[in-house]
Length: 291
Length: 164
Image 1 (tube, rainbow over the protein chains, first blue to last red):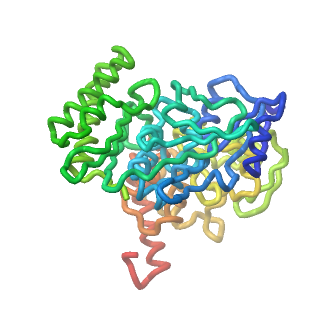
Image 2: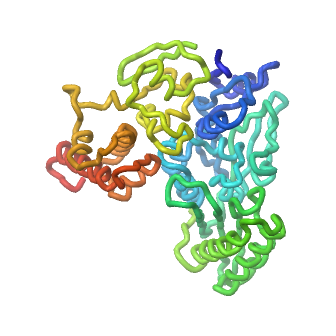
Image 3: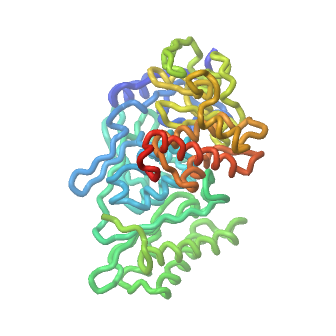
């Protein structure tokens, strides 16, 4: 006998209904790249997979005015090739291109990456920098949560059972902003992040930083912005000295958050280096232009 | 449950449990053992197949999710006479095959790349193979085979402009 059942949801309403049928524990299935790995090592925690991959609106990337909408079932391959994301969020595209290999990117989705909420999830730091909002739907209605608030710990989110993550929205970053994503893995491709960082920033007409978002990945329990680090940079001329000060602040804040752990000796050096490298890239070199 | 889909360009219908992967469906139900079972967690690429033309790890695909879609396995890649096609011949000629276990996945990764990019650089070929592991060859001969095939196909389709 099959250990679990499968059903294909044809519409969003259909999916929400199927996820909430009584007496059957249902979870959404999109790319399967996390679920099929998890069920090989964990006891099966659901009775049925509700396949949401063929619901058209979940696979759309659109821009209306200055708001971009990104469907939860958009694959990383789709995102990498998408002109809207290439233009307004090049560091998100860069992050997607570091995930797995082509076969994993052809299946893996943003909704899956965020709801699985691995500490090393590569789409999360850029989504947090973009202040992306997750849109959830359930029979009780719709609600919205910032991605930064949605993820509460490694593999833990505020998504409730029966609730479907449908899409993300974010505002187009300011003109002239530049962004950068750096990932440290054990090899160039098909690797899990040991540490990563997403940064996006801009300077005003006098050359002072007037916009900055910094979010490291796999550094602390959840992907969050580091306001003290951003404060070091805001209103300053982003020269080497200020960039180093910001990178050092980031390391201090990481240790405040995690305490000194077995990996800290490695992470404090590496995080400082990728923070300096990414901030140098956007402020002093040729970081990826937004817009 | 009943799953209807196109397998190697022919419509098929199979009754299978809902909880199996596409890999298990191909190997156990259709006896298409060219698709290899190895890591089963999407790390090695030995189980690569084309799903609607895109490379996927069949060990991570729910069997029922291929309903109505097109699946191509290594058994579906061949010349018109049923022998090896140009890419497969180049794998042999360039010495890209040693133990052979990874080769079905490598050939499908190559075909997936060539279907969207007719003139890939060596770096692009290597990126396209990033999810397919080979313990024998060191990859260079595999890259050579795909590069040679790309050039030959481009010449065949566009004999007037070689660089395209």
